[in-house]
Length: 394
Ligand SMILES: *Cc1c(COP(=O)(O)O)cnc(C)c1O
Ligand code: SF4
Image 1 (tube, rainbow, N blue to C red):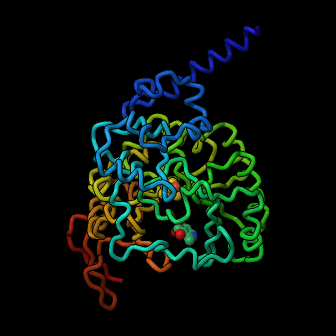
Image 2 (tube, rainbow, N blue to C red):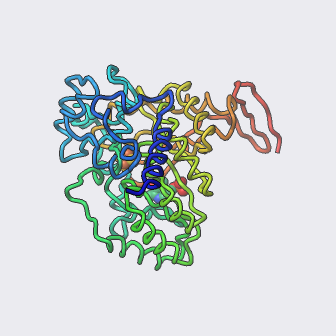
Image 3 (cartoon, helix red, strand yellow):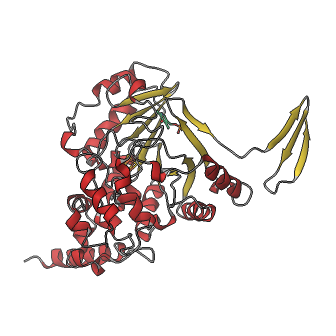
């Protein structure tokens, strides 16, 4: 037997088990009966995390105490937006609290199968703005490439639930983006490509590498970004191998979907740190969700925690009127009030833009408290964050 190999392996296991420690926001996985014998090397292996996702009622019920609304939700979700929870995400769930924000984002409720008023299958009319398969071209200079139909964890509020989470009908052919790439190549106005999905970071390194190469080979594409939730739901995916792929395509920006301060664990911080250190600017996208992050103090805490891990808050989205998400939607006034409590009260870097993605395909429209009280020739009457009134003369 090769002694150095054993020592190296043991050393690695020891190092990895330190990385795998979740910090104060999560349970140590070894405290969960289902995972108590899992080797830290496996726990840290993203393929292991994907292979061991929780998809069944009898699995999740070993980790949390389910209520009848959840049981019914899980049964009915099969074949629609199925339940899939990474073991990592499961360690963040409060086992006895049905209102746990981590749990509510991952465990289906029976309410998902009720269609609320004004709800649609494709509220943003993305399919109507699709010039090629997997591509949405809505704005003049940029496109959205829906690179996969899979995610590490399926968010119950997902806007793209018409596309994602139907794993049995997934197209995995290597040429599936060819028409989209030809379209981008043929349209010189496109300078910005946003790769999203599903979650593009569920693609294997080599596949992602070849996709990024095909896009960056197009000379008029000058800005490339990836939309992902993996640093939050599967931080183990951010590996040295993945980073070395990204480094070849700098400048590359990334938008990460974060919804609650509890999502920012020690493990997520390590993943985001690796991305930032490799020169990838990180932004966050947050969906405003009823009972999850609809209080100004929670949203402020989230924004502060994001700055601490070098993620710049980018957007807060009004929850889209997608079928079965009524229980997640808040009135627009809730979002406006959150913006009111952020702007001026805290660092400008902690203030994202609140947007409504217009139903029917109008794109993102910024919504803000009103700071202009009146406007006449050469004169603006404004109010500040403390509602004091000021006049600006042009
Ligand atoms: C959100 C989105 C973009 C990117 O918008 P930015 O405001 O530039 O971040 C591009 N295309 C589509 C279809 C989108 O929904
Ligand atoms: S990660 Fe994004 S695309 Fe995937 S389920 Fe969540 S919201 Fe939907």
